[in-house]
Structure formats: structure tokens, C-alpha cells
Image (tube, one colour):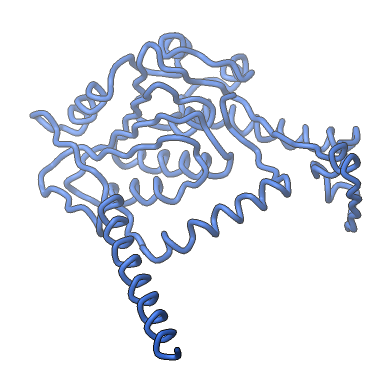
Length: 295
């Protein structure tokens, strides 16, 4: 009997080992192994920002990498994003601004480059958009949920101990009082003013001119060009060719992709479920985040 139990245990261990090895191979096949090799030729780097801007680290890493490469004479920043969290958008903005002071960086807007997507584009050397690109949406939004009524219905009571009257402002467990609304609105207004000043500085426009259209409205690429928020109408290929010309590359520029981020495959497997669990907890807790996001 004991021998049978040991054999079953060993078989389970072997099966788990095989499953782990297969998972590693699949992860490598999907995500790529290590860093991609860059060409030694002169060319134009390509950095892509797609989807919600929730973190700045990878975009900043790619821009800094290309800044150090002598063979990369300019960079095209392809933006296809509805925006995202304020702080990461500001961090990418600063990196684009610093890059533009040393090398040419051309933005190519895809189908959507609004709010935070426009924010990170503003300090570039030139901005290209398609005529039908959805862009602008210069504004700030703060979304809050309230489940106080639901808690009452299911008979759950909550208690909060705090050090100041504003410490739980925005909590999903209680409604907003007038003083809460005033305090949060002041934060939103200040962050909106930061957006306006950033666009004015990046686009070299008067602050008052930007403020007139900083009411959250979206614009087509064609409209944005008329309001000096975009420089030219054109495609990604047009932006690449212009980057090559500005960088002094005579022939059609070679497009150079950034190195892939090194991946810890064990973390990928282990953190997947953990990330979903912690994300659910944060959602339930009603996390508060200021957003440069197009609705």
C-alpha cells in the first residue's frame, strides 16, 4: 500500500515537472526570449504606446535606450491610446520632452490618441495624425463608486476610524459631502491646469488659446491640425520617412525596434493569479485614480 502511495506521489511530481517545462516553452514562444538584436545600420527607432496608459516604465526604458544608440538618429512614437492614469502620462511626457531636446521624435497617431494619449504627444518634434484620428480630449476625470445602499440592503455595517475629516473622501462606503466634493474638485481643477500648461509648453501655444479648447472635447485629426494641436496629416509610414529626413538619412530609413524586456517566466506564471486577486481587491476597495482618459 505504501509503495503504491509513493509511486502515485512520484508520478504527480513528474507530471507537474513536465507541465512546468511545457509552460516555460509556451511562455517563451509567446513572449520571445531575451532581447532582440538591433541592426548596426543607421535608422529610425519605433516606440509604441497602445491601450490604457497605466505604467510608464517600459516606454521610458525604450526611449532612453534609443537615446543612447548612435545609430538611432530619430524615433517615431506611435500612439494608439485613449489615455490613462495621470502620473504615468506625465512621466512619459517628461521623457518625450527630454528626448526631443537631443534627437528628433515624431509622433504618429493611430485611430485614437486622446487625453493622456495626446498629453504624451504634445512635446514631440512633430505630430502626425490621420484625418480621422480621434484626439485632444484635454481634461481630467475622477470616477467614484458608492455601495452604501447595497451594504444596507444586505445588512452589512461598516465603521471607519480616521485622522481627519477628508481621510476617507471618495470611499465607496459613504456618500460625498459638499466639503468632499469641493476638495476633490480643487484637485481635479489643479490637475487639469497642469494638462493645459503641458500642452501649451509642448506645442508652443499661448495658455489661453489651449484653455479655450480644454473642455474635454474630442477632435478629429483634421480638426486638431486646424487648431495647431497636430502638425501634419499622414500615416505611420509618412512619419517614419519624415523622421529619416529630419535625421539626415538619405535613403528610406530602416525601422529599428527596441529590445524586448527581459522576462522572468516564473514570475509570469506565479504572478498571474496573484495579480488578478489583488486587482479584484483594489476594485472592491474603490481605488481612487485621477485619469487623463477619453470617455
